[in-house]
Length: 407
Image (cartoon, rainbow, N blue to C red):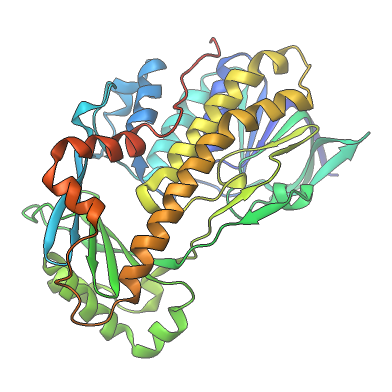
């Protein structure tokens, strides 16, 4: 090794789970090193939704006011268009939280904000351009990681390694942790189009026969997600980019005059949707959280919410044992037990929506646009009080966490 370092907790991955866990553990007096393989957080088409549960955590940390000074858009309700009918799906105005809305904010702004707060803490360090390549095992436990960066190879010894490096996790693969693939019927093509100040508010989701389009207001741009059947990208490319532009224009007239901004396939970024879950999230000396433990469907934008909640639970349970250098496998299993139930319930809901709604829409043929919305959506349209249920599930999630680890 060109360099050898040591810390109490080494976190692999600078996404929402990793940065929040690093911040909260350092805030609680734990020495933490976060490894991020990129030089910055500027990667587009990552989840941009900040849920009321995460905003509530910002409030508990005393950071909400400063956080909301960052450029963002707020959604106090979510609407979807099925065929020709627009339906309000979730009404956040009744949530028992400080912020009764979802915030749309580029994820890099969220991560930069957390990184700046963490940098004020003496025990926190963020190592950019340092890519983890493997794990160090010693006496039957994980004792650190091996990484490589611009200055050569690095060996970092730690009492605990937290894998928060996403759905393609190097950590969980190196640890040999078994993964259950739960399946997904779709992939998503993400792209940006210009947004004009006088553009009308659009439904978040538009469902037409054989097509689904997501529109997210990001101020001067529309962030668009074109949902396609799983594995159909090659067939779609054979039809040509103009066919895609025409399909988008038919679905959303507000962007019809701007589809020419899609110059070619390079402007469309493919997200291969994966839903999976580790059977066991830990080994002695190692814990996986966030997408490294459970990759989520993009439905509802709940991936960030689950990742942040995992980080809070991990900090609540492990901060004091880490300070006292007594983290056991039982404590790591306690984190999994705490977070596995919310994960299972959320994924089950996502799989139900995928199989009963997404698949049926993508399989429809031309001329089916006038088909009545599914019964659950018709009930939401008829009885507004029912909109509080999806608002609660989306906005707070199952078993929301709160800050317990003392500063």
